[in-house]
Length: 506
Image (cartoon, rainbow, N blue to C red):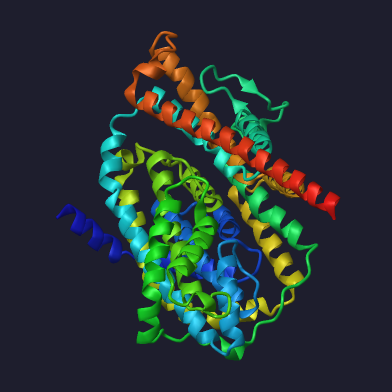
């Protein structure tokens, strides 16, 4: 009865409902602008979550993630420019359907596949709540240290093709996390005499700078996107024949989205292309893929929105953000003085419950917003790009300043924006650096606390069963990443050698 009464309280309190609708609306509108990915759409909201109730802030950000994964399909279908990286798979058949005069049908398949993926992903997320809450009671400082090491160990899968660059980014993040006050002795370190740095560098400044500001700097040098045809963008509900044809592809999207969502480093982009490929493999209409196949929209869009829910599993359960978007959501948790991980289910079970209810409301919100916000999305796509970029920049700067009314923090965010621009130029991945910033304090503080409790006995990390298990998994990740890295280099070298031989014979 207590759960039902809490549910009734949440549903009769307008705050969570408003946050869910506002988050979905902002996610759809933001990601409908090409280049403004889901993580950037969320990062724009971060400064404005200060002062909000924790439940509302988290629901707002999580709903924006969900809405953004759908919103990226709008420009993908209408102007052949994906709003998010994951929507790149939707371009293949979505724009082809638009050229055939079936834009409304394509948008309808995208919307309802997204809703279906959101419902399924939320069900998977909720079903894992009880196991994670039981696990929460068994964690000690040694376990938390091992958990941080596990988080750092997934850098290999997050670094893309270059493991060295991923490690460089992670070390840079750990260095940033060390700025401030020593967690045990209380001594100042790396503050360079600045009192503003005594409490460290807030992760929100790192996230806003790396993702949002650097993207604006990059977009400023790129050409404007095409214009959308407002008359061809009326959403149409899929017919019974279309539903019969696309449900296997949607099922594939749900399965792939679940697997990729709980896998750190995978995310919506990998899930979208894998589900697209598997849908084509099992389809009876293989020849239509790339030329307007409905399955080519249903599979990746279902996978995208499934990931937006299942990607929260490693974040909530282990405190490990496996995607850029969940890294931004982690920043939202930290702003509210909440630490995602095992103890979240014990200390703040009410907020977790509110999040689940808010995510359920966001599914309904996507159906409403999907229809109501199509005209504003098209209007935004057709605005001059320079005006939009200037507006977003002003929004970011004012939001960062409003956090503590500090020009120093604005300067720090701009510095990280410049750093992010340089990292994009040298192709250094962002997520390993974010992991270093977020997990640095967790690793250091719990490592030293564990040694204090064990009187300096390092074997405590192996005698604790949870710690030993997590360290073992971390070792597997590290070894697998190293082996995969050298295999990739070997294949690349062999390919280059074969190409040279062919050129020599020619």
